[in-house]
Each structure stands twice: as structure tokens, then as C-alpha cells.
Image (cartoon, rainbow over all chains, first blue to last red; front, top):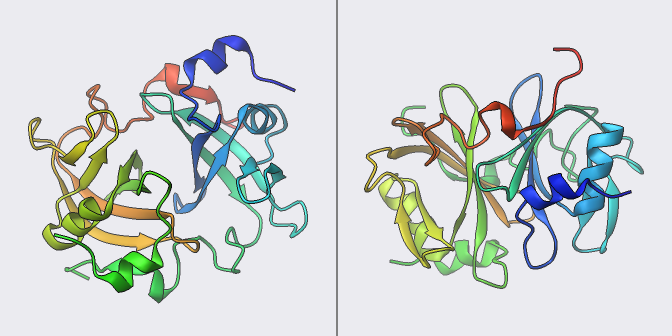
Length: 118
Length: 118
């Protein structure tokens, strides 16, 4: 699989051939996670509607939830103004974070600055 | 300015000394933009509550809205499970995108995959 040359040319791949992917819960608009996509990961995400990323640590294509069952059905994909980030809206099955939390930003110790009016 | 050694050690800076910053509209939960922070940018964001980033193109600290007036008052900052991304919730004055749109993901040509149920 690979992206159309037209789409690939619109995107600004980094030195490793990746773009950033911000993943949002379609129902709640919570930001679930940040991940990376190469050409194949984006193509697979667009054609299968399964959230698919590039694992920088394992250096392999990674279909989210393939082992955990915590899959993502992709509702919408948008690219930003300068073409180096995609915004992926998904229906998330189970927790998005590998630590078991709903998002990768949950839990108290992940709070660096609290809302002053809360 | 610089971050406390304890906080800096919790974060996973990339080879350029940066972490990703996903910026969200506090009122609407819209993802406004993706940007990058170095140590000073994060420290400044946490201490001044003004959204402050590292411009990779200009290679300088960038207080969002300093010239345009489209400033960000920072409500909350969270870090993700593996410490390489922060989630910044802001009150955005004016459009967040330098093209004049509310977010960097707006406008039709930025839509790569549409919601099938829409």
C-alpha cells in the first residue's frame, strides 16, 4: 500500500519520513494520544478506517489494539495548515493508553499546571 | 529561565531538545494546533500562563500572539504517559491559525477522510 503521490506531496514528512498524529475521541473530543504515521500507516488508516501508526520504538507498523483489542474506528482525518500533523477522530474501544487509562494524559501525576479557576 | 531538574528529567526530549505540544481550546475542546516546546518554552508557559513555543523555522522562542495579538491564556498543562507530549488547554484570543482560521485543521481542503455517517 502507499498513498497517492498527490496526497503524499501535500504532507511535510520529517527526516524520519513521519508526520505527527493527534488522536481525538469522537464522542467526547478528549485528546486520547499522540502518535506517528509514515506513508503506509496513513494510507492504511485512510483505507481501512482502523487507527494505524508507526511505532518508533519497535520500528514497525502498528495497528492500534491488534493485541489489546483496544481498537480505533476512524471517523475523520484532517491535516493541518502546514501539512506535518494529522488530526484523527476515532471511536475508541476500551482505554486508549497502554497504562489502562482512558487517555494518555489522565491521572494526577500527569498534571503539570492546574486550572487556576477550578 | 529553566525548568526544575525534576520536571525536566520526567520529560523525553527529542534529539533537538523538543517535546510536542497539542493545544486545545478550553471552551470547545477543539484541537487548535500542534507546536513544539523546548525547556525554556515549557518553563515560560508554566510560569506566565502565556502559550509559548519553539519555532523550528525561525529557531527562536515564540510567544503565540505577540505580534498578531492572538494570544493564548493557558488554563492547564498535562504530560502524556511516556513524557514526550504535553496537552495545553488555552483560552484562545482570535484565530489560532496563522491563516486566519479558528484551528489549523479547519477548511475543506484540510479534510482527508470524511465521517461516513455525517
